[in-house]
Image (cartoon, rainbow, N blue to C red):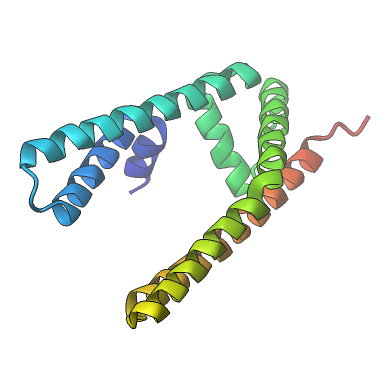
Length: 175
């Protein structure tokens, strides 16, 4: 199992395969009337866009830290596991990575209340729409899903901030 997780973390091909299969599955599930060839083309397009975006993000992070993309993936794993590197060169790269990611988290935090408000407004809008049409089953399920998603986002944000602050303090030089 560890080898499969390692392969998915490091390989863009593995991640592209997952995105392609999910795209095909959603196409088959939600667009049953379309031709299967259209599902393949749409799934390939989604895969190309997502993997292109992911590769760009990996390249930017790699450039900001001075490490190879594979090394960045390993360092992110160490951050999640709270493993402080002992090698001085790896510590410098880890320090750059933590600062870069904390900066991204801080920039994203400014917009977080607005995104949560938009999601809340869509949930309330669905409830109002459901109340006026008389069908509340789907709007209630949607609202519960939105609330669960918002709680998950807040929990993940808090966890990421805590992990990165812990790693920043662990990497501080005692001098």
